[in-house]
Length: 123
Image (tube, rainbow, N blue to C red; front, side, top):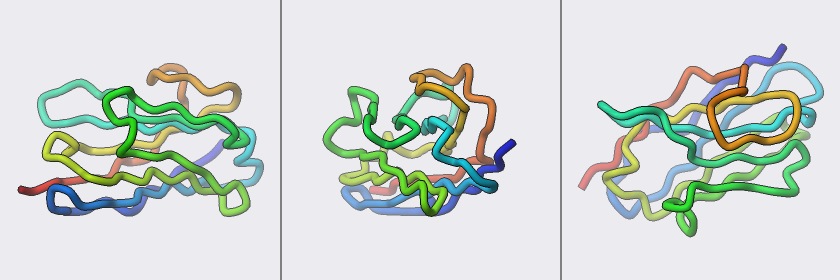
Protein backbone atom coordinates (compact mmCIF):
# COMPACT_ATOMS: atom_id res chain seq x y z
CA UNK A 1 0.00 0.00 0.00
CA UNK A 2 0.95 3.63 -0.37
CA UNK A 3 -0.26 6.76 1.35
CA UNK A 4 -0.24 10.08 -0.48
CA UNK A 5 0.38 13.44 1.17
CA UNK A 6 -0.32 16.60 -0.75
CA UNK A 7 1.04 20.10 -0.31
CA UNK A 8 1.40 23.37 -2.16
CA UNK A 9 -2.14 24.60 -2.61
CA UNK A 10 -3.37 28.04 -1.65
CA UNK A 11 -4.60 31.38 -2.88
CA UNK A 12 -3.00 32.99 -5.91
CA UNK A 13 -3.88 35.85 -8.20
CA UNK A 14 -4.85 35.28 -11.79
CA UNK A 15 -1.71 34.89 -13.88
CA UNK A 16 0.30 33.54 -10.97
CA UNK A 17 1.88 30.15 -10.39
CA UNK A 18 1.68 27.34 -7.88
CA UNK A 19 3.42 24.01 -7.57
CA UNK A 20 1.58 21.11 -6.01
CA UNK A 21 3.43 18.17 -4.51
CA UNK A 22 2.26 14.63 -3.94
CA UNK A 23 4.56 12.60 -1.71
CA UNK A 24 4.15 8.88 -1.16
CA UNK A 25 5.02 6.82 1.85
CA UNK A 26 6.78 3.51 1.51
CA UNK A 27 9.25 2.22 -0.97
CA UNK A 28 9.08 1.46 -4.65
CA UNK A 29 7.16 4.58 -5.62
CA UNK A 30 8.63 4.10 -9.06
CA UNK A 31 6.21 1.22 -9.61
CA UNK A 32 3.23 3.58 -9.41
CA UNK A 33 1.74 5.66 -12.18
CA UNK A 34 0.37 8.95 -10.85
CA UNK A 35 -2.43 11.18 -11.97
CA UNK A 36 -3.73 14.57 -10.95
CA UNK A 37 -7.43 15.35 -10.97
CA UNK A 38 -9.46 18.36 -9.90
CA UNK A 39 -12.98 19.13 -8.84
CA UNK A 40 -14.44 22.59 -9.05
CA UNK A 41 -17.53 23.59 -7.05
CA UNK A 42 -20.65 22.08 -8.56
CA UNK A 43 -18.71 20.12 -11.15
CA UNK A 44 -17.54 16.56 -11.57
CA UNK A 45 -13.95 15.62 -10.93
CA UNK A 46 -11.87 15.85 -14.09
CA UNK A 47 -8.53 14.63 -15.34
CA UNK A 48 -5.65 17.11 -15.22
CA UNK A 49 -2.38 15.26 -15.84
CA UNK A 50 -0.67 11.91 -15.49
CA UNK A 51 2.85 10.55 -15.54
CA UNK A 52 4.29 7.11 -16.13
CA UNK A 53 6.14 5.14 -13.51
CA UNK A 54 9.57 6.17 -14.73
CA UNK A 55 8.51 9.69 -15.67
CA UNK A 56 9.47 9.18 -19.30
CA UNK A 57 6.02 10.08 -20.56
CA UNK A 58 3.46 12.64 -19.42
CA UNK A 59 -0.12 13.42 -20.34
CA UNK A 60 -2.07 16.63 -19.91
CA UNK A 61 -5.67 17.59 -20.46
CA UNK A 62 -5.79 19.42 -23.78
CA UNK A 63 -7.13 22.61 -22.22
CA UNK A 64 -4.17 22.80 -19.84
CA UNK A 65 -1.31 22.23 -22.25
CA UNK A 66 1.15 25.07 -22.20
CA UNK A 67 0.26 26.10 -18.65
CA UNK A 68 0.56 22.95 -16.51
CA UNK A 69 3.47 20.53 -16.25
CA UNK A 70 3.70 17.23 -14.42
CA UNK A 71 6.99 15.74 -13.28
CA UNK A 72 8.31 13.33 -10.69
CA UNK A 73 11.37 12.59 -8.59
CA UNK A 74 11.27 8.94 -7.60
CA UNK A 75 14.26 9.38 -5.30
CA UNK A 76 12.06 11.72 -3.26
CA UNK A 77 8.87 9.70 -3.77
CA UNK A 78 7.24 12.86 -5.08
CA UNK A 79 5.22 13.93 -8.09
CA UNK A 80 4.79 17.61 -8.90
CA UNK A 81 2.17 19.62 -10.73
CA UNK A 82 3.51 22.97 -11.84
CA UNK A 83 0.70 25.37 -12.68
CA UNK A 84 1.52 28.61 -14.46
CA UNK A 85 -0.59 31.48 -15.76
CA UNK A 86 -3.42 30.39 -13.51
CA UNK A 87 -6.95 31.41 -14.42
CA UNK A 88 -10.10 31.81 -12.39
CA UNK A 89 -11.44 28.56 -13.87
CA UNK A 90 -8.52 26.66 -12.34
CA UNK A 91 -10.05 27.13 -8.90
CA UNK A 92 -10.72 23.64 -7.57
CA UNK A 93 -9.68 20.97 -5.14
CA UNK A 94 -6.77 19.10 -6.67
CA UNK A 95 -6.19 15.40 -5.99
CA UNK A 96 -3.28 13.17 -6.76
CA UNK A 97 -3.83 9.47 -7.28
CA UNK A 98 -1.58 6.47 -7.77
CA UNK A 99 -1.84 2.97 -9.11
CA UNK A 100 0.57 0.14 -9.72
CA UNK A 101 0.81 -0.43 -13.42
CA UNK A 102 0.51 1.61 -16.57
CA UNK A 103 -0.74 5.15 -16.58
CA UNK A 104 -4.41 5.85 -17.30
CA UNK A 105 -6.18 9.12 -17.96
CA UNK A 106 -9.35 8.60 -15.94
CA UNK A 107 -10.22 8.16 -12.27
CA UNK A 108 -10.68 4.42 -12.45
CA UNK A 109 -8.53 2.41 -11.73
CA UNK A 110 -6.44 4.67 -9.53
CA UNK A 111 -6.82 3.06 -6.14
CA UNK A 112 -4.74 5.34 -3.89
CA UNK A 113 -5.84 8.92 -3.45
CA UNK A 114 -4.49 11.95 -1.66
CA UNK A 115 -6.77 14.03 0.56
CA UNK A 116 -6.97 16.92 -1.89
CA UNK A 117 -5.62 20.43 -1.71
CA UNK A 118 -7.51 23.63 -2.41
CA UNK A 119 -6.31 25.96 -5.15
CA UNK A 120 -8.09 29.30 -5.35
CA UNK A 121 -7.36 31.77 -8.10
CA UNK A 122 -8.52 35.34 -7.51
CA UNK A 123 -8.89 38.23 -9.93
